[in-house]
Image (cartoon, rainbow, N blue to C red; front, side):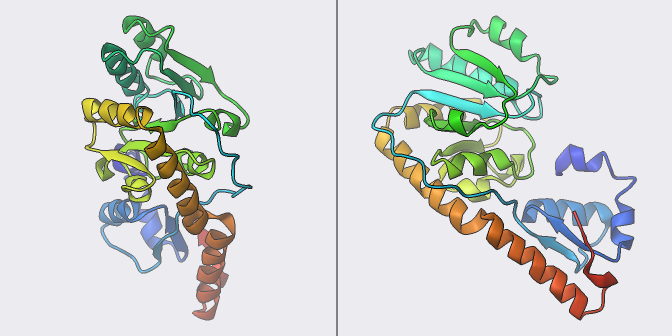
Length: 253
């Protein structure tokens, strides 16, 4: 975790420093915050990115739907309310034909009331929990990640695996900006809803660019986040631990 979520466990974190184990974090920002909270940057604290299963490349679509998807528990931390705010801005700019679908369970964002307050009942749909969101990603132009705090959300990697780019906030909101960069989607200044709405509109208005970013996202997730390569990294760390005689190579995450 990062930020307030990590700090909530501050009383328990000194135990990590005492562990004779290799500890994995999802990105450099999470590692830095954890190290700061436990008062050191222990040598056994390593960055190992999350992994997803890479399936066959998705079939090319002749035309992209103007569908924006979000995913996660509909909480303030995940920015479910900001997802609706982006939709409202686009409607105000005459893009009311675009659809917004939120995949995930109910949380603390009061998303239904936000939708009613903004008059978005015919534009934003709360899909709820689904067993496999891949079929919804396959219908989408882009994934919108309005999280206020999110270490390295898997949903962006799962969308990328389906050739879908991400629009997200910069590293102040979490580590996924390091994956998205400028080739797997669009990164905007943290918590700037207007900038996020402009980025979404730019991609919806430019199918060719949206497709190119989706292809780059697919290639990047194959290179950096395939289960096989990430698993090998963990095995290598365990083997190194055994060679150094540390606790029989125990791994904690």
